[in-house]
View 1 (cartoon, rainbow, N blue to C red):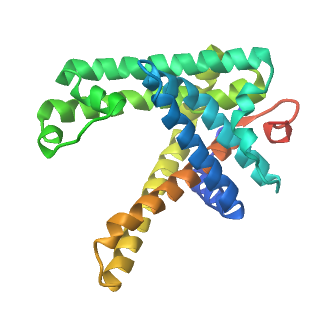
View 2 (view 1 turned 90 degrees about the vertical axis):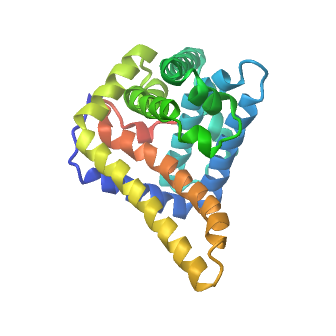
Length: 263
């Protein structure tokens, strides 16, 4: 396995491939994404440990969507069972994925703990446990500072775990080694990832403008608020579809490409 350095414009290619692949299998990819969301939502309902459990399952669930994208690229229809690919890859890789999930949950909860030092835990409590969002709460200086701090701390955490599930599953890496290579791949290809993030932000902004314009032309501006929710979910599903391509272009296997391996 070798790290590949790609030009900044590759970020646009990743976005394009995510959208095109989703459109090729819209029912499958949308259905799997909603199952992914449902799985994490159900996990949060477990008493006391729900939030931590959902966080721990996120790497494995994300790997499932990447495996689904891999199948779609091959022209196959990804079945629902592909979401649990991480749990069908043998005991060694299963243990590694579980450790990776535990590390992700610990890292996320740790950054939320740091943010709690700023506002007494209001932002962390709202994010992890849910609750009512009020204008008064959001406008508080402490709440805003905690929110921005959490976002700043989440960037390095996301870089550590971006490729890690795929490296554990397809390359058989240890959790710690996968975190190192994931971070280095994102760091070395930071320009491409910056373009990738900006492009997705642009897609979302254009969709919001288009929905608002259509609602205005139909004489019902309030419809934009209702219509934007499913549109946003579809865009997020396309985003998750594109994650596989960021991995595919950031690494090359020394024997055979991960795209040719069984999910």
